Image: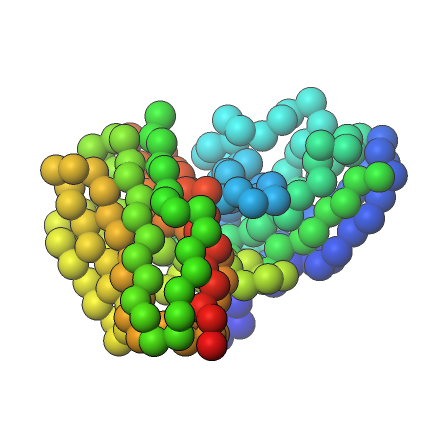
Length: 113
Length: 113
């Protein structure tokens, strides 16, 4: 069974530029998570989807971050404009539902210059 | 909200020795506690988990113990091997807070050959 797929794996951009990350969850998983992981820290939730619905986006900086999961499968996370402090690893995870174990993708490493 | 603290931040052991990593949580409503291993450049991978109705769980060289009264849980790795070297994260899931996962800050384990 394929795991969570993320792309790109690495991204270097200049501040104020836009950037987008893509995630394909494990087949059949209804719940999808986006996390941000700063260097030397644990993942912090940005947004969680149950199918197409964002059920917890309380930690998403809505002035510059947006996310979508239009068909309840793939998801994209966008930052516009990016700031220096956005440099981090952006992890996508999925689970069958909100009470089951979540599985992480390899992450996208973002560097904002 | 929930607060998960993890100790130690770094741990160095000799190959063959045991390693113990401890986490505490603040909200007694948390009911599921996974442990993840993260190797350099990869996403966190689930290695073992425990639910609040169980006190201990083992899987070969890895075990997790849970003390609900004291609100702490621990990861035990016996007969450590160099390939166990990685960063380990504990997490707690909190149902009252939309089943959100709260992660510890990580423990960098170094197993010396």
